[in-house]
Image (cartoon, helix red, strand yellow):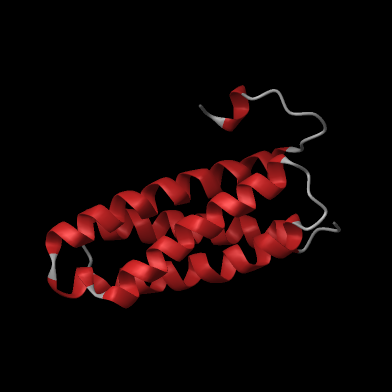
Length: 122
């Protein structure tokens, strides 16, 4: 379900966009983990898989904090931005095929919106 379909109280457009980016990033990271394990080689190195799983996890956590209007969402978004950027760089380094590029692009989009949220007052 798209975040636009949810009935949220007092949620601004940037926050909705960040929540959706986090949910989308979580999804593509998990999908890419499966892809990487099937590819083998550099794609399936433990550090790369761990980073993608960490990215997926913090994205879910950040989305949940924002959905609950937690006063700590700026902190989770700050960590999320860092992990998403690392994951994007790692995906770019591992491969240049469509799946890796899509994952890197989504991670960067999520990092950008999370950076904006991290800079807002809690």
